[in-house]
Image (cartoon, rainbow, N blue to C red; front, side, top):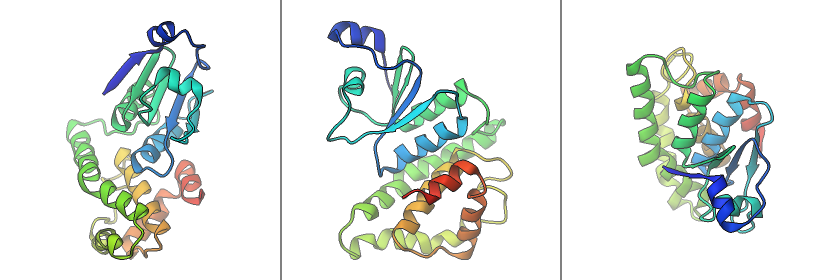
Amino acid sequence: MSMVTRRSRLATLGKPAPQAGLMLYVAPKDPWNDWSALAFAEKDVDDARCERIDPTRPNEDLLVINPELRLPALADRELLLTGARVVVEYLDERYPHPRLMPQDPAGRAKVRMVLEQFATELFPVLQDALTAKSAKAKSPIAQQVLNSGRWFGGKAYFLGVEYTRADLAWAVWLKGVQSLGLKLPENAQRYRDKLATRPVLAAYFKAV
């Protein structure tokens, strides 16, 4: 977790403060950045903004408060947070509606277990495939897709009737898979279609 106060940083550098309010800065074509942007969008906070940053040409305001350019980065008044899971945890606690974690401890633990699988396996393999230049380099994600038919049952959402951060992660994975031209198994496609009934995810799936 990385946390600094904007006031102290800006006072030290003598730079103008960026626009006040809730602001999320994300890197393009990165699974964890997409995941945090989806959680941000689901909260639908008034006057909140999300800005995609070109790491080679970041804006000056962002460099003032985040000189190491760690993304995603959430600026909320005097607070700056970086790291996807830290950002989403904060958003869920500060803006609890809609809730993106189950109310019971067991349910929350299950979501965290799923996210750990994304951190150690699913997102790294997806990122490698998205940046790969050879067909051979994409074989691990193709194998994951073949296995994915057994991951999705007949539940409304991945872990049951509640829509959670785990579903947001799967949305990122499913969009990435389809951008690679890989065909989803029937169960995975049904789950993807269910996710697409949510306005935020429908827009995400349609975006280039």
